[in-house]
Length: 255
Image 1 (cartoon, rainbow, N blue to C red):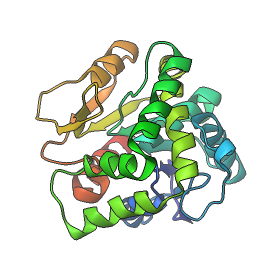
Image 2 (image 1 turned 60 degrees about the vertical axis):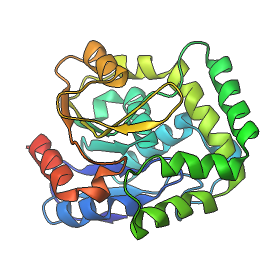
Image 3 (image 1 turned 180 degrees about the horizontal axis):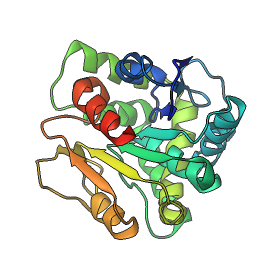
């Protein structure tokens, strides 16, 4: 999806088992004043892809290829959840091409030995069974059940088990192996919009104003001048749950 005119361009990147449709409120709001791009990553939404092609490394390269192909001039990259990793990887590849980064409810799922982290993630999925694992993962993202949240859960469960079971462990491996080098490559301004925290078992909880997490502490430690905004009372999809608040923060960051 590519609409609008005006600088700086915004590139929106969705999360695990999601699609560009999760940015519909941002697309509608921002395309009136600037160039807006929202992509479907490989094997997501309308973009085909094979399991072996699905990794943070491939996705980061794809995003930078999209930036180059569309001749976007120093865009701001906006990622949600897994998309936070993708935009950090894209910036790691070509930091000179990025004007700013926005991370919406990111987290870290793997640390220590990358092979061990990936193996543990695979074993967890196998132990639970993919469908039950994916449904549990997504139900924890919402603290209030509505028809809209149920549609998001069911969308994830319907996604290819082959894709999801390949991608998630690779994402965990990227967290362990590459997240910190990717943070070290950040030179552009960084806005973090955070709504939830995850414990060691991956269970989510809503954040309160003034609260911090190991993820946020890592960002503050590694990136000078990071701007962190806590939106309390929301689940993992603030761009859908409170689009006006998210849009206002991104608009202020652009200015």
